[in-house]
Length: 149
Image 1 (cartoon, rainbow, N blue to C red):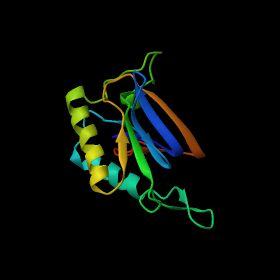
Image 2: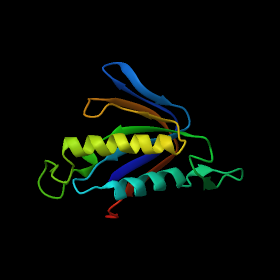
Image 3: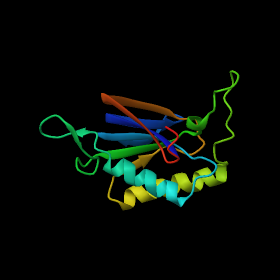
Image 4: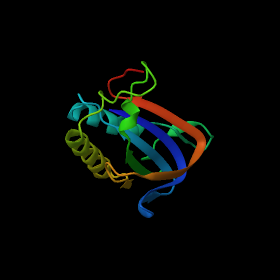
């Protein structure tokens, strides 16, 4: 499982000009499911994101999590994060999970975040989406449950 995490002051996602999710201060999570991902990867990713200390404390140090700041999540599926561009000019998508597995884990990821008390909004799986956000900092973090980077 791979994610790009962006700390935001606000964000939203639209499908066909309809807003499907919008948040105030929190994190945008662009999430990609690998073909070999399991429940173990999902739990690792949710735990990492909920406790990632990338929000400022009262002294201005990044020392607080999204939970501690009462922040929100906007989760958007993005299979392109597993695109392999090492050869040629066209990315290979063979590492991405097939749609059935990806949707199942994507939906479970959102449910797991909500169960942990994080207000969570989402995009629409396999839809053409427009994501707009105000990156706060900017702070952008890359996560990979297979620890390839």
